[in-house]
Structure formats: structure tokens, C-alpha cells
Length: 328
View 1: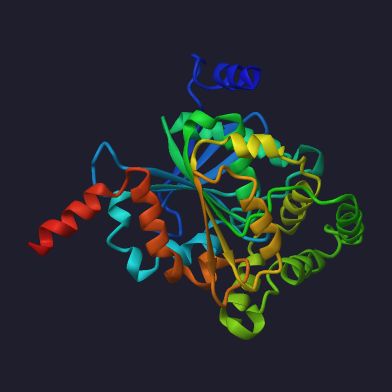
View 2 (view 1 turned 180 degrees about the vertical axis):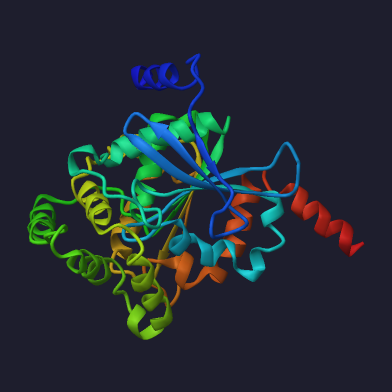
């Protein structure tokens, strides 16, 4: 791990050459600024939403989204919820889109698409560019795997992890073969619709058609704006990911909040994952009448647990202080 850190430090922090970061202010969401940060595995696109409060104690949240989505589809319903309005000035939020998942991206060759481990490594380029000392990771699904892998590589940088519907352990041999057969039958270049259908059927079919058909249609609509080859590559990297060892998970000292919908087909796997984290630092929240995509299906149900989690690691104190003063 030290060699990895030294390698990244040599390529980022200790370089006399400035990083050629492209900054856009004309993003479709006026509250966000888009950055293109070069890494050793290619370009990484992220979006910063900076709080208006200039407190030096303002926490940084780095998010990483699930398969078939990007940060907009995955996290906007949560951060744009009316009950989050008063908290946003106290947060510095950086959304990382998986490689090639920003809208209208060009295709990345399969030979150049990073593994889950390499995606975790690339987060350090973002951390170094923004000069972040510590942050809270917010990961959904496969994005939770990326952030947990990062936490094992750079544990001193992670204050907390919020994992929403994330299955960290790799597939069993039988599951791997089954998923691999299904994936290899998807001709991504010739049949992009097959990739999207695979994702919808295997990851977002947890009662969404009945409980939240508008959300399902929105997911389908926004999938059309994401490059289908890169959608496939992210799934492929997820299926082929290496297992994060149980002793690495248990050794994490940061606070962990696991969130799972009670209707999710991955519920039992996530409950099993919870048993591997240090019990003194971890909490699990099960959300009623919800599938895997809790941040989009039931964002209002996780706002108060989110506040308490942040307060528990010493953040949002300015927010609560202002509330107390306004009530006097």
C-alpha cells in the first residue's frame, strides 16, 4: 500500500508540473461545476457543489454512483430534496462519475477501462487536486465497492462511509459464471439496448415498476444519455472485481452507515456485509417499501439518519447551532 501511495504522490502531489484540469461552469445543473481531472487510468469527470458557508470545518462528501447511472440520476433526488435545503450550505459535495458515464461521453476502449481497484486508486487524484485532508464517502451499489476499496488503501483520508445498497464481496464461483455468461451474450457495440435491459432487469427491478414507475422511466430515459459501451464496461469491471478481504473490512476505523431497502433482492447480502464491519463503528438502516436505489426511491427517509451520522463524526455543528439560535 505504501508503494501505491508513493506512486500516486509522485504523480500528483510532488510533481512540479501543474495538473491540466479542465473546469466547466456551463454544466446543466447551475449549482455544480464540472472538472475533468487526468489520472493514470484516463480522464475522470467530477462535479463540485460547494456550500455557501465558509466555515473551515465544512465537511467534504465524495459520492460514487451505481451501475447504469451517473451522479445526477443516483444522488440528485437526495441532495435536491426539500428537507436537504437547509443543510446544503454546510456541505462541500464532489460527485465522481464512473469513467465515461457523464452524459454524451465518448466510448472508452475495453482495454483501457479501469478495474474497480483502479477506480479506487483514481479517487486520490481528486482528493489531491481539491486538497482534501479527510472526507465522507457516499457510495451507491457498485460505487460503494469503489469507495470501500479506497478506504482500505487510504484509511487515514476517510472519516466515514455511507454505503447505499452496496454488495462488497465478490461473486461466488457459480454467480460469477452465471453473470459472465449473461454479460458475454450482450453485444454492447451492436445491441446497446441489451446492456440497458440487463441493468434494468438485474439491478432496478425491485418493485420499481409498481412502487415508482416514474422513477423507473426516468432511469430508462437518462440511461439513453450515457454511452452504452461504457455502461457495459462498468458492469464488466464490477462482475470481475477482486474480493475485499474480511480482515480489511473489519480493520476500517471510520464510521460506517449501511443503508438497504427492505424490498431489495440484495438485502440478505448487505446484512451479511454489515456483520463484517467493526460493530463499534457501524450501523445499518433498513428502509421500508424500498428496493436497492434508496437515494432515489426514498430520499426523505434517509435525511435524518444522514444528519445524525454527520453529527456523530463531528460535522454539521454550525447547522445545529444556527437552529438553536433561531429558536431562542
